Image (cartoon, rainbow, N blue to C red):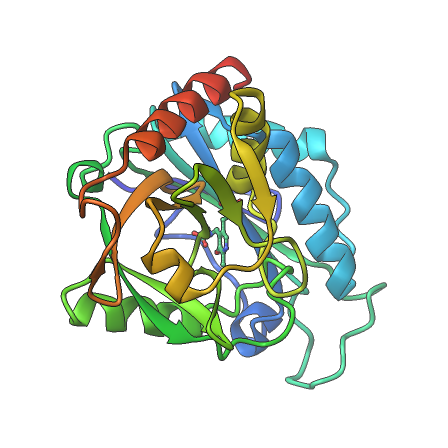
Length: 287
Ligand code: PDD
């Protein structure tokens, strides 16, 4: 069965959907995106995603003349049309297509953004990797210097993820000067031997994960001591537990980093407990 997708104001079968070959998203990755999780047919952390999307658009100067209410309506309509129980909604916004390929931005009064939304089904609650946990490899962070913008320039992230899989591992972490930056498409946490929850502080180096933010809130109210600061690969290797988090994985345990076992080499108890707390809390706030 094919899906219905949304392209510039129209709901259309995915086989019929069209975007110009001159679209700057295609030619320059001149675009931002959001991924919102769906459970029980409803959206997770909707406000966080729209807030971050507006920020990303502002940082690269794209004017989107669609309100958050309208975007919410489109998200809901696609979930209904495609009968999605659990999965993801992708929102992709490009600067649009100019008449010719040119580096400079086209005139905003003439060229309007391209807006595409599509759904993808995925088991989020019952993730197959929960029992085994993830084996991670570190790679140098060779991305551009604005990883805080959720741009569609994802080639290097795709390359390191593939390299990790080719080496029989599950996930890749970006590392700079020995310090863990973030995962290929997720944020990272460790639990120190003395029970502190540590995650890298926000800056231009990482994406301000909506899941990361929710975990900080929920874990604080569950009594965890939090440290938002850089941590090294060596510190992570010596940690009690480690995990990644994102809208597509929620929280998944990490059991190995660069061939070194974390803790007992099995998914950590606190990690699994935090995942339960996270799911319980987001379920109360679905939109
Ligand atoms: N990725 N860091 C990076 C580099 C990411 O690409 C993502 C999300 C995150 C976590 O953000 P959030 O918790 O808001 O999903 C952190 C999405 C899921 C993706 O590209 O598919």
